[in-house]
Length: 267
Image (cartoon, rainbow, N blue to C red; front, side, top):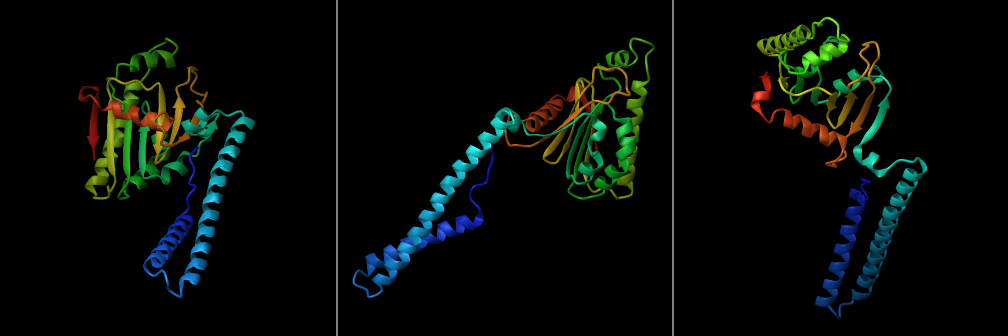
């Protein structure tokens, strides 16, 4: 469990009481026969009482929170591993997730998907607004038209029938993204750092979308019927290396570990 037990106010009180006690003892050591000693003792005793009360309160707060936390996990039949993974929400359909809301409020964005023609057509206006804002970072990972997994993907979507136009859709999406970011740069409207990474070697067994410290994870569906929407999970960063957020970020870093496996455009 991650919890913040020390507030800034508590920290200031603890530090102040400790300083008063130390100052009192130092004064008594230097001035053992001073007439102020009785008053110093009163101040010191009050400070000790306050310090003890705060420490005892913190002790019980820590263990009470831990007990409540464990009871909640037991009551709702949730394992600590699920909490550590950072699971926030489950969506029975990808379309139930408010993509525009999360996208518009984010500064650090990573998108890892096959090509996302429909997605970019739907949210491109929001993406352009973000690209015009200084300090934003946008990294988009999609298939290269020569990706080795495209043929198998087409066979899946067409149920073994005639080959589809997946490569052309990928190329169209790539060209659209490149042209729009180049145009923004030409007009001197591009303020964000934008990268387009085309995957030559890596598959997209699941897509994910990073919005600052949250990631939407969407497993690839087995159904070849496109009308059936995939489900999705929203995770948050927990700081745990085994959390889903960190694992997805590690996956992204591995994608660009070999220059032969991708093509990159930086705007």
